[in-house]
Length: 79
Ligand code: FES
Image (cartoon, rainbow, N blue to C red; front, side, top):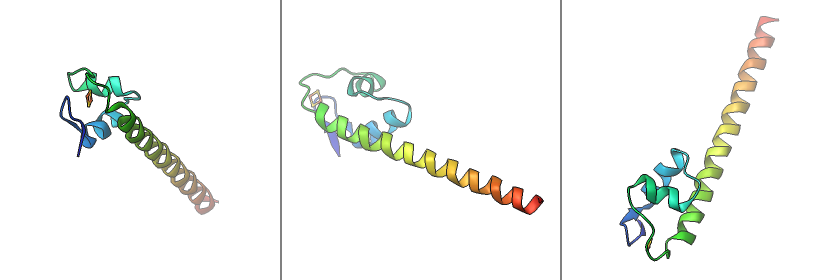
């Protein structure tokens, strides 16, 4: 799905840029070698960025919880 029609950026571009650490629409444009023109895409990009950042934070928390349980399980097994 195209998110930025001026630069032909897609939701995949936003997701990949977020994965690479982008936190602002301007960073997404810069990572794809372009600049915002009309700015109509900014609200949509902000929404997609928020979702991607929240999903990554939840995945990190989940991984941390799994790691904690594994360490606890190993501690119980070793005791
Ligand atoms: S739609 Fe993205 S700059 Fe115009």
